[in-house]
Amino acid sequence: MRNRYLDLLRAIAIVRVVVYHCTGWAALTIALPAMSVMFAMAGSLMAASIDRSGPLAVERRLRRLLPSFWVMSAIAVPAMLLSGLAWDWKVLYWGFPLQDPPANWWGAMALSATWYLRDFLWFVLLSPLVLPIFRRFPKIAVLVPYAALVVITFSGVTVHPIVHDAALYGGAWLLGFAHHDGMLRKINRRVLVGAAGVLAAAGAAWFLTHPGPRGYDLNDIPLGNALWSAGFVLIALGFAPVATAARSGRLVTILNARALTIYLWHVPIIVGVTKWGEAHGLPTRGWDGISWRLVVVGTLVTLAVLLFGWAEDAAGDRPLRLLPGKKPRNAPISPAVPSVAVTAGNKAG
Image (tube, rainbow, N blue to C red; front, side, top):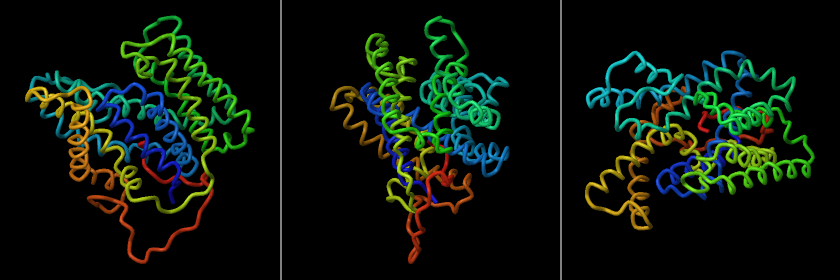
């Protein structure tokens, strides 16, 4: 069983990520803070998995996460080694990215989005320890990452990227815990909207007065990003419909079942298409450049899904298919169930 609302939200988020990386439009980071949304939904699914499987949930989540990453690594790592990457034991992080794996001159750009898997991996590993603490002290637990980010921001101290991202996105992950446990639905709607409004207003006040190198792109303004995203997640998950259904639209199903493949491959495709366009004198900026690149990137991402999406089926113990979601003939439709009971689906988001 799948939650159609969460499936739709995840599908919109992954499309937004691709469009943002192709266009660079800062407004998209404000309209939909996609990474925080995906971390929040992943936190909800992780809490459900722990309730169902206990510590084995970690193994199950890693088994769904890593195969698609290994497929990409099997292509990218030999290519980088043949084009200048020096062999080092840290290359092994391409098998288990507890830290950023090493990359050569082109890999550092084309494979930069792997930071998400690094952070996701740490959140998964820590969840069995954090979830009991969250359930005992939910308010304090949620406040801790935001307080840590405030301290980091105002002190100017430089911390490890994993620590920084735990402060930036840890609150969203914990709000996912709250969504799974039904805590957000128990909050009075006026109180929920008020809290979301205060957080969003604080985030907006910060990023409007502290623009980054790309203006109001929230990826350059961590504190504004975290606060604005918290308000967004509170509304998006706090008002999530309870009813679910067995099936979603075909496109939404495909985007969910292939979300990790899309995420892993879209950045190298965008980088490659852009470099190819520049080398051949084609426009890469403005409406002309954005238009043709979106078409080509969309086509090549679809090809990547056809070529490599099977890894997500294998990771989820599903029959291997080019495109998932085709309705079996005469298949019955399952009845709706409460969303708190829904735990199916892969991580991304």
